[in-house]
Image (cartoon, rainbow, N blue to C red; front, side, top):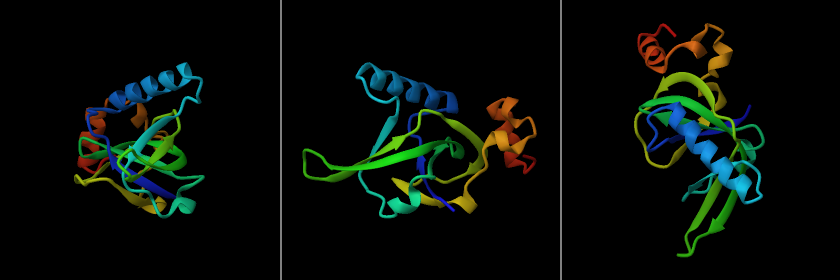
Length: 145
């Protein structure tokens, strides 16, 4: 069973905002001759890297709900110019929508056990993927989705 990370997606109002950000980063990487992966820089380095890779994901909290995830492809540690240890979370280019799961605000990232992670929207098989996000949010809040 894989371990995942969960993090607030600060500045994004929707999964579409996140997708735009990821696409921009992928194009920038391709233009530089790199793989089309996005990176997210964090100050804290996960201690449980072996459990996160190769099957873990980074789940994104958008507007108080887990709404999407990206595959974790790697974790690269480095020291910044001020001597502070940091890491890049190397993320796959695909943003996968998940069922909504409420989350309170928190700083940094947290570990998320696979048993507690929301299912992928496509796996629900209820036509939820075609519903507008606002409708899915309301149905999830009512416990109907």
